[in-house]
Length: 243
Image 1 (spheres, one colour):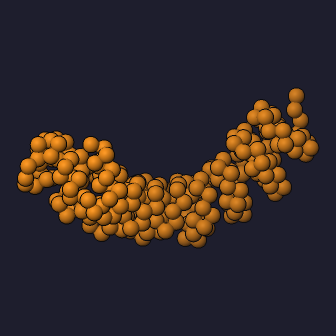
Image 2 (image 1 turned 90 degrees about the vertical axis):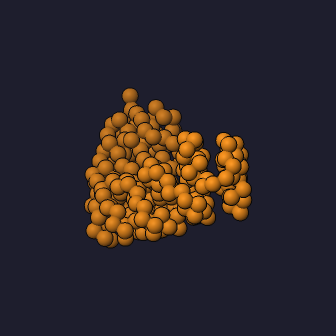
Image 3 (image 1 turned 60 degrees about the vertical axis):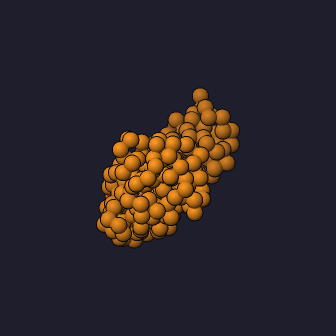
């Protein structure tokens, strides 16, 4: 069954054949395919719709509508959110053009995954940009998105810098600090604690300290604990103590 469903997605030209074959497995002979699928409580077409956003397959979506399938509120919301997550702008445009809408959080999915054009489109439709949207844009590291949102007058949360710092987006951190965001001690400490990448970790430490931000005494302990010798030695060289 799954192979047939995948074939529909991979090869849209075979859609009618494969969907019919899926339904024949459950006894379909003739008539409206959607009505039959509903009557047996086995609407495998939903599985296709669930993958529309991820695959970005506009042909599949249009075909499903052409045979009478409209989807449920849940499946449509899922498709819209996945399109925002994966940056499939054409899918979003089509779904909205036929009257569907996403959830309040949909625009944040676009921000979190760095899809600026998707974010712009959703905003143009009235999706609301919030402080969380800024924070998720910082998490994605998309500096152009951060600049765009601030140019429109939007502001992030107190912890927006944290989202950028914890994901190694140093240029975003610097830009936010230039705008007046504060980089608290605990942000420095947590960057040091994260220890995902030793070289990047040291770069973040040096750059943040070079513009005046200091961690607490726990900073050098975290660097030592994480096993990052360069970071430990750097912190020690600028006066951090470790016992």
